[in-house]
Length: 306
Ligand SMILES: [Zn+2]
Image (cartoon, rainbow, N blue to C red):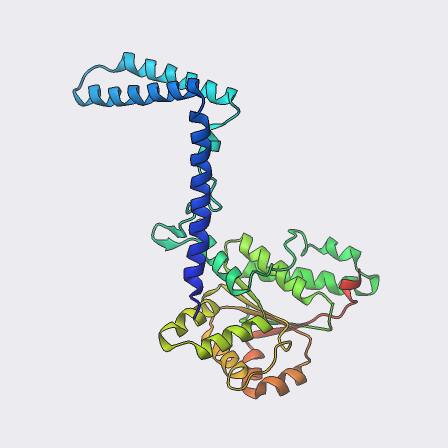
């Protein structure tokens, strides 16, 4: 059984090792220059000497200026060789945790991002463009539908602003190609920019995770399921596209909807009647609780043709 968290840590470690190695290689290349190497050696000697004298409470002011002058020469030589001080620092993919996954003993946001990406099978969340949800984005849409898209975007903008104080389930319905996944993706990116964690899964992938959970030994079940309940927002994209697996799909979808207290956004081509028939009454009533869910039916043209 795959341990997703372990995989995420491995990705971070590889990135950390690569960053450290690249920095070390640059330093080694620099030391091949005799002039630089001599200045570097002298800097080290002076630093050591300063520490030694300071520990004996002796005056080190003369040494300090000698050290500073030498450092300046070293930096100058470095520049001549086309290297900046910045180049010698490891270029971590996450400067906050330096690719360790931990900040002050807590999980860094990048760890979740990597974990969720692995869970989503490496698929990109659609619509990373920052300005997708602004109403002028609707100007490119058929005049006939423009107003309804403007309304949709302003509603989703409010969702992002109010998050996590939003209805528990948002269901974006409508025909194929009206932009449901795009809208859910744009919301996801906007929330991530605000520092929330978002797990975006298409229903086929979620179904595979359910199956993995079903087959997992008891001790590792929790590690498969917990990201589904932990993420600040869970997006289930294209509900209904997945095959129904006996004892798996409906059961675990119900378990997920019952256990998860944080917001969920679902996109689906299915009508309410079709959803009810496919997933049974008990799931349908969880999805569409009058007080705690909202259905948005997107009526529009096929945006994918544009
Ligand atoms: Zn980080």
